[in-house]
Every structure is written in C-alpha cells, then in structure tokens.
Length: 249
View 1 (cartoon, one colour):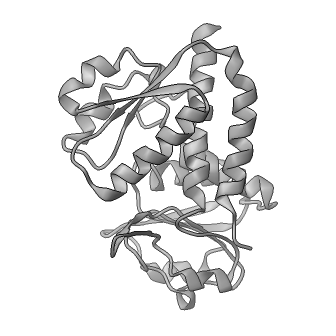
View 2 (cartoon, helix red, strand yellow; view 1 turned 90 degrees about the horizontal axis):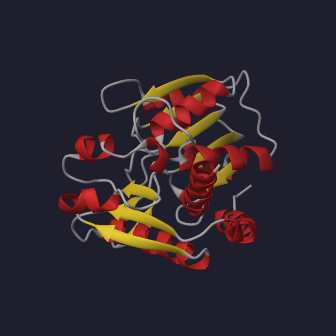
View 3 (spheres, rainbow, N blue to C red; view 1 turned 135 degrees about the vertical axis):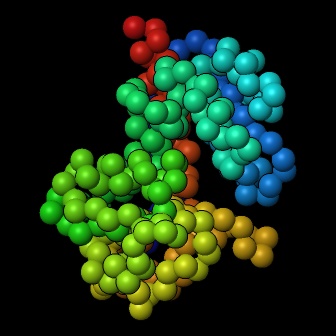
C-alpha cells in the first residue's frame, strides 16, 4: 500500500486550522544559508502551510540567530555550517524539530509522521525487527528512538556501522541516508513496512533512498515526494501549537 502523505497531511492541517483561534500571533523562525534547491523547496512547503495556519515565517541567516529567539518556534534548516552551535542555542520551549539535546517537550516531526502512518495502517512495531539507515538528527536518530519505545528490535546502519544486507531480514525499514536509489526491491523482505524519509536532489528533482519499484514488495510504502515529507511538515506546526499552548498555560 502506497501511503498518500499529502492526504494525511491535509487532514492534520485541517484539524490544526480549527485549533488556530486558540492562539494569538505566532511566528516561526527558519535559520538557513545558501540557496540549495532542496533546502528552498522545504522552506517553501513550510511557508505555504504556515500561511494557511496564520503563522508568520521569518527567515534569518546564522549571523542573525539572536533575532530568531523572539519567535515562537525555531527551525535550523540543515545542512548548515556549524550546525551543532546553532542547534545548541535553540531553547527547548521553541524547539519544534525536537532536535536539541536532553529532555524535549515534543517529538521530532518525522518520528511523529512515522507514528501517524503506523496508526493509520495498523502497523505494530512490538517484537518486530527494524532497521534504520542513517543516524541523522532529523530522521535516523529520532525514528530509532520511537521504534525502540514501540518495542521493536532496532539496528542502525551508517557508513561506518552495519550492512545493508541486514535489510533482507527486517520487518520495518526506515531510510534516512539521503542517497537516491540506495535500496532496491531485491534487498528487501516481502511484505516489509518501508518508510522512505531520505530526501535529496537527483537530476534537478527530489528523490528518495528507495527505488520506487520497492513499492511492489512492501506492504506499506512511503514515496518521495509525497510520502513522509508532507506529514512531517504538518507535524512541525502541530508541535508549534503544542509549544504555544504550553507557553500560555
């Protein structure tokens, strides 16, 4: 079953629209640099959702970071130079990406999106073998934490650890490497739940880590584009509302 991420995101955003009257003015800061096509695409998508929800998006360069602290939520758009420095400066009460170290108020948007897909498709991770490819702060690490919390036996594959051969025995595979076409159908177990969150640019287009043909062997498959991405964007604003509600309580 190919997940329609746009449809799910639309339902989440529609629910948030009904909540919007509970808050006053809301602003979301986006820290970015350069004009990478994939980065600009991500920011435009977030800005469109923000406009629907009456949230003002303010863009800052890293040098302007201190001005971002006046906003209700802060996103550091990766990749960015000196990322750890900027991420460490995000107050937990403004951390919509749940990317700071230590205790967090909300869960990372991609992890929330994965959880939503599991609920909607009756996927239980308890006792299942799960493999996460990539250990990034936005996908691999938070999704691995989610799967462990859900009772899965989790392995993480990076360039220096593990092997893609492990995918063949996995019940659940989450991709976050950012390498187009890294995984092909023959590498997977029949009926696998395949979450492709590895978005990158290939020949001027956004592409996932999985060959689209992987949908033929997966019981649940999230395509790129149109799969996990739109849902994760919706979850950013769900997190913003949670933080705003906590601030006002």
